[in-house]
Length: 109
Length: 112
Image 1: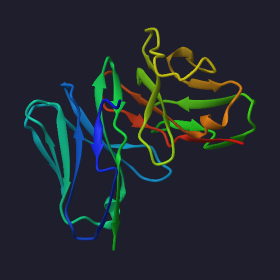
Image 2: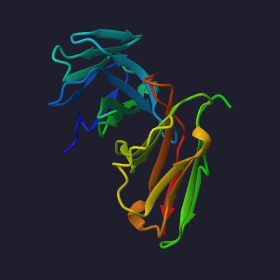
Image 3: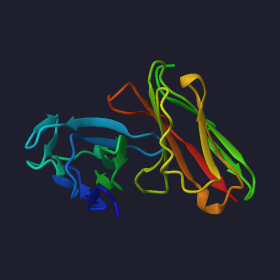
């Protein structure tokens, strides 16, 4: 059983559309991170959220941490082909960082 | 270098052979992680080094897998008697205390 459940597993959309991906758990976390990974590269950190209910914006990306600090969402507005990648959430658990299985996002022109 | 460096970038080996994967973390980073990623999947935790503490080996899938970190810097992940199911991308990451992880580009291992 995954500590962090991400959904959907795969998302294919047209350029200009909006999308939301989710990261859920039954555990409470002190913080949660989102990474994006492109083919042939390692994941790169996008954001860290630490406070329940927190909302952070990074250009067209909006990240929200649930009030109970058990879940998070990533919303992309007016997606562009450059947003294509594997989006991973991660949280500290027993002293180490655990990752979800990721959501593969494909944005076509 | 400025980032985490992993070598080799690609490794093809025959079933039953041993392989060594190397990771050079960012200078000064105290924490070092190894993860495994199968095609299109998330990251599976393998092992974690933090400073001089005993490593957390709880993610190693079998006793064929081992890792060491010499002098608090370079790390080597060794897989003995490789099996086809070991084929994956092996990612190394480092961080300073509780800061976010910086990943290398991984070693793609193919066991034939």
